Length: 576
Image 1 (cartoon, rainbow, N blue to C red):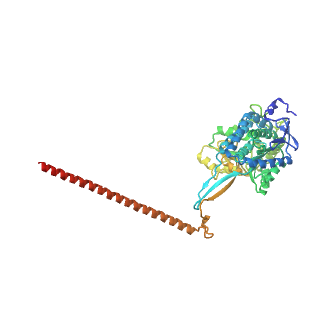
Image 2: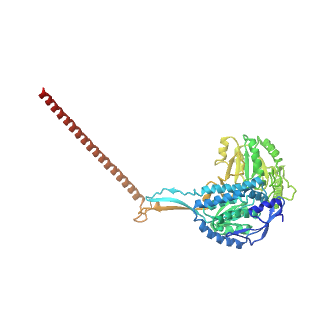
Image 3: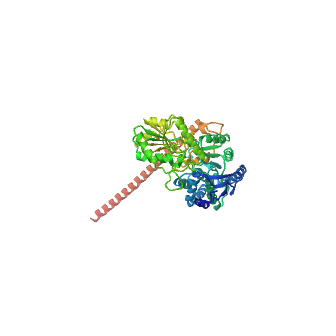
């Protein structure tokens, strides 16, 4: 075992040893399943060993989780947000170490590994604010002395099954939101990235313990298909989030649906970038490079199809080939590396088979197309000229392979973009408003992510992430994705003493018909009018009385003044 290698010393800082238990059950680490090895894809050497979870471990954990959920869902949402805030702070202190582990075990370059952990921290921040905004609606009722409102309550337990390409970020998309919504979380990490599952869980468990909360609020398993199947079949888990291939995702969905559970699916992508004739090529070329080569083409949002307007086709292709030749391939932990290894030897074999199929269907390899001889799973970044009608273009080859094709009109480009079974991400490069607004409109891209002048990958957490068609239709992370993790109840409250029925239904003497309701409304209106008339008449009478009194006062004043004047006059006459 190579655990003693100097470059692995940082693993101790995040709780990883040469042999690790792979099941976090009711606050305790155990593992009664098979002993497996975590392998470095750069050299296919063992990093450390993990004892996976057994089905007995799973059942013990679920019983504890079910009880812990009853406690957690009664904690006020802002208090739950405070716990998630502490999780984010704990991750910040281990950001670099966790990022290194992601790069080491998964194979993505260090900048992307650190960025993945940062994404979880960002999700924690987002969820903290959300914990004070899980708002329902107050709805006007058509019935007198009634009100309607929406209540949002926790589902209970949320199952999260993640894939190797984003071994912890996808957990963050789900767990941060699920926790503030009052749910416990059961996580099954990817079988080939167990060390990341363990390291992440230890940080979360530490926060729960510090706050004297049940450890079973967050349960984690390292394991294979049997643990995933147990989660899919378990009626104690009302929502299962699954990230993986469309083929496996469909099986998970069918299993969950059989017990009337809910699924949140993030499946395959077959993403396209369209470059129009007015595009900023200096902006487009680096975007295409990152979208096609980043994470060695193993993102679900990787650009797999490049559609170039015929008038700029060769110019853009030549520029792209120049930057492809400058891509540094090697150890993902080394500075300057842009392309690390594929994740497993099986991924490398799939790349080889994919290139053979491409050639058999008329594809022309413009650059790359070969495996790099080494101890690791390295392959060349590849550009292929091919027809959009080739069958291989409709499929997702999970590696750094970019299909390039021409188009003449925007309509044709959109048709090519929408012609594949998947519908995750898409982007167009243009400066014309009339083009970009058509692109994002009803006759534009049919994907869940529709970009303009940026790559297909690198989504921000503030928006809902997910796609259409064979991508599964799920939405995770930002926007109003939180609603999928809660149970909505419509509540109607009668605070009066009568029993009017909706739609004016008359069902007995005590209920109101439409006609009686109308008569009541008319009678009430007449009463209001009559009261207003009486009030108006009373105001007029009061005004008349005030006028009469005023005239009397004036009359008396003037009469008194006149008498006083006569007396004065008589007195003057006598004296003269």
